[in-house]
Length: 389
Image (cartoon, rainbow, N blue to C red; front, side, top):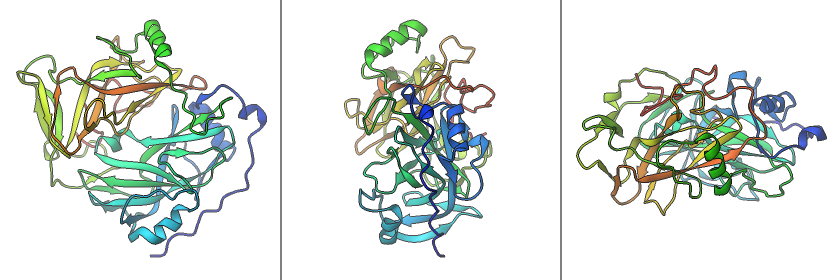
């Protein structure tokens, strides 16, 4: 099968000066819609669909072909992704009719969306929640880049997703949505890798004003998140461990699969501790109920060697309004996707397992998380991905 022709990139047309300037921060949905209208974001064939726009991010869609490659890669400053694929691809997997991606393999898929960023804008990508909860490792790659998941100012070109299923075999197709993109206005900042993250002093002040989380809150390099291994009483389900050698999961299906066919429940017991087995995948939940106010977004820091040899989160992006609209007084619990590395690691009930970094929005979105979205994860406790009954 021949590789599809390279997408045509339109001549760069900067936004009007009034829209280039403004407060720095993550762009809300109404501004993302304006970027689409002004062709800063286009699609290889057809239009960008309205339901791709989330409160402060844009869902990205898979293209027509997945390339199985020998190894993950970054193209570097002098090369394109297509040039690297010419060297590293093993075989091609057509996606129009759906195809199974095998666990342990690495695939690269050209996405349907194309960017022409102005000088004052950058973009950051992360997996969608449903992708992370299936232990599917997904990262964004751009041409001439030295980093994953980041799009530099004035980037003009195609986007690619690197996909590596770690636990389950998955079925995807053209148009499947595995990751999402946030747009950032740099404002007056000249930082090439600008992120509008709140420092601890700002975060403590915000917590005093609106109570970001319940319980014994610790703010150190972000809002510290503790794991719940007690469940409030003995014998309740406090997590899940993924089973090996299961069937295929179709990423575009909802409420189709039985939990017991893919997951082993973990119940609380005396001592309230859990040993993470090396290279196995767990779904756990936070002690805290937390919220993200409308003028902010948040990101879970995935790896912190000071906390232990494990990865605590894949899809670590929390939209504005997460937990804010819930009936509970202090929002929603965070569901944690945990994978231990090369050694067993013991978790104790209430142990700090992750950090939540809060980021400024450039302005309040006109639609918040959980508001007219029918989200599977709003108001969540311990919950698997939307694919399970």
